[in-house]
Image (cartoon, rainbow, N blue to C red):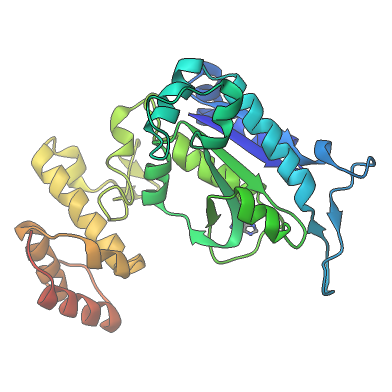
Length: 300
Ligand code: ADE
């Protein structure tokens, strides 16, 4: 997986990404990271890349030309570094090109499928785990980080394939959002997480939030670890964890339960919770939601 980040603050990306698990993945060569400083492509000669917005208003807008030049040079370099065979294979699978046609490397750039280019913006589709999984299948991903009041729409129309937001709030730039996305995507790449299982039994992988975890000591400041976790009975531990995931999701993110398929044991547990037979208490609102959910959903 190769990440390319077009930004005005390359040092922010490099410092943020070359640490911890992702830093190790980069050191091992499982992931590559290249930053492209958009300021290097200034057309004014003094490093300026922004100007006033047409129509007036507060703030500055990043100009189209520096962003476009940075992108074109990157694509040119990426294609130059790719083996000719790989480019030929790609060009022959592009629907509008017949396999008999032979093209010189220079020409291929126009027709080979360009990598996805993600523009980070609060106006984009909201990022989630499903999107992370889907993007983890790409070989190359380019991120474009905006600043100020945004980027001239004409260059966005020309080069961006995906506009993505990391949530309904406004940050000062796209650098942190791009790092959030790269982190979530990189951990899906085989070998990045040391425990092969840890990507499976976590929040969202089965549509539920993750169950609580405990470690030593058995009693911490008077609070004991739930006894089932010390029982050594794997079936009971799995059931307890699933129940905790259901309960936690119900209390914090109930809307997620609408797409979860419940089995018989899930339904029994949730019915016990609803009817106060489980020792867990719910608010009236939670009871109302759960009652409707159990009445309408089908068993898997
Ligand atoms: N840039 C500024 N705020 C953002 C957000 N919430 N998501 C993605 N990019 C952004």
